Structure formats: structure tokens, C-alpha cells
Amino acid sequence: MTEGAGAGVPAVRVQGLWKRFGEQIAVAGIDLELPAGRFIGLVGPNGAGKTTTLSMVTGLLRPDQGTVEVVGHDVWRDPVEVKARIGVLPEGLRLFERLSGRELLAYTGRLRGLPGAEVDKRATQLLDVLDLAGSQHKLVVDYSTGMRKKIGLACALLHNPEVLFLDEPFEGVDPVSAQTIRGVLERYTGSGATVVFSSHVMELVESLCDWVAVMAAGRIRAHGPLAEVRGGAPSLQEAFLELVGAQGRIAGADLDWLGGGAR
Image 1 (tube, one colour):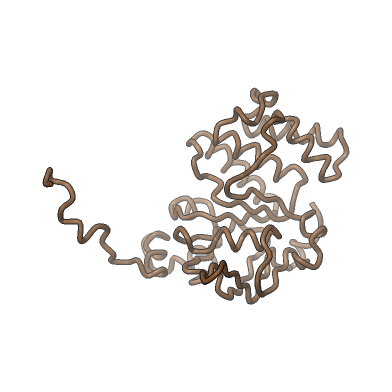
Image 2 (image 1 turned 60 degrees about the vertical axis):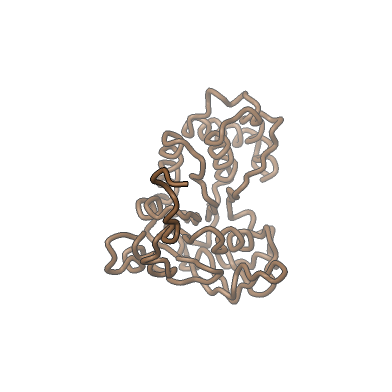
């Protein structure tokens, strides 16, 4: 792992970040610093701007305004340096489906400039830990959703990045695969690396993360250590609902015609 994140430099620093799509403002001038060496959750309802923010932070989408630094390097001025230090598991993951799992890892490792023997060694270990060894020669096109998430995570981890960005990594994943992914991520952060993952499932974030940023309508509503953001609320879910203005909203309050066999 390269130097940088452990030297007191934030894992991510975002200043004045904006993104519009036509008339719609997806991200509205956010400022945010994410500490290094933490398990960080970026949480918010659907449409809050989480995926757009992560796409800009990882260099997949150019912002309209603002700057992004990852471990002290500007994402848009120094993209090669940044991409060497990050791993990304995006939403709607696209993979080379006509490769087997092992071939995909070998290809990814060579793209990263790793020696062939080291790629083979790391690939074997990742396939084993992620319970993919038995499917390593199967084409990715035949992988289940959980298997795709796991092979995507293996690709993102192969070069041992300083910061790992995951967009809804547990979406559509079965409980066994989710537990496997969780164990790998906890081991990774335990070594001093940083995980930033987006989710709208508060219970999951509360059980995994020690630092949280809450996003709604393209803005950061709160950020800091989990206990601080939760405050006096009994759970992160309750604190989140209050922060985004959804507390007390009754789903279907006007649907008095629904149910009871009435027509």
C-alpha cells in the first residue's frame, strides 16, 4: 500500500462540488472531508446524489464546479496518481463477461502493472477468501448477482488500494455472500485502509461504519463519527429520518380505499 493516507492527510477532500443534469441539480455545492483509515458510510434516500458524488470523487464523472482530492492528489489534475491509489466497485457494475473469473483478475492485474506471478498469487487468495475458487473457470456471464459483486470486489482490491469506493455493494446480494463481503471489508479496514460505501440501508451502515455522512437533495445534512451523527436518537435510522425531514410522514395516509376488499 502506498504512503499518503496514513500521514494525516484526509482520504477524501471535496470542496464546492456541483453537478447539474439539465435543470436538475444532483449535487449542490458540497464540502466534505473523509478521514483516512475508517469505515465510512455515505447514506441518503434514493436520488440524494450519492452515486453522482462517488462518480465525481473517483474520476468517472466530471463535476461542473469544485475540486476533489484523494489522499492529497487532485482527481482531475493528477488522475493517474489517484487511480493507482483507489479501488472502485460502481453501481451497475459492467464486467468483461466472456472472461472467466480468474481471467478477469489476471487481466485487471496486468492493467494495473502488477507482475504476473504476483497477480496469480493474489488472485488465488482473493478467489479463495471470497468463496469463488470453485467458480474461477466459469464465465462471468454465468455468475449470479452475488458472485458478480464478489469478483468485482476482488478486481477492486487486487492492487491493494489505499481507498476503496463501493456503491451499494450489498444490493441484491444473498446473506451468505453479504457476510463474506463484509468479512473481507472489515479485514481490509483493520489494516489501516479506508472504505467509503454508499447505501440507503441504515441498519447495515450502523453495523459496519464508524463514520457517516448523511446526504439528501444533493447536500450534506450531517457528517462525523457514527455516535455523533446519531446523537440522542435510538438508532441511525431515526436520526436519518429526522435529518432528511421524513420524520412523522405516514406512508399512504390518503389511500383509505386500499385494502379491506373494497373496490
